[in-house]
Image (cartoon, rainbow, N blue to C red):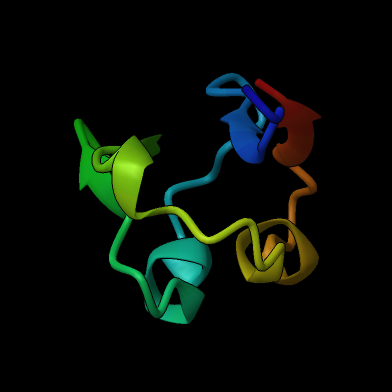
Length: 64
């Protein structure tokens, strides 16, 4: 099975601004306890908009 790029969120660096949630057209990200979380991994399209728009650079794309 081919590996897919998925967002890995560093919760210590996440400031809870919701920029990634707003940019995620697939609605794969959501807010949990004021932190961003990948809530629907199957919906992620690996577009990288979440990591590109994170002002605190808390999101890195990793192969999974």
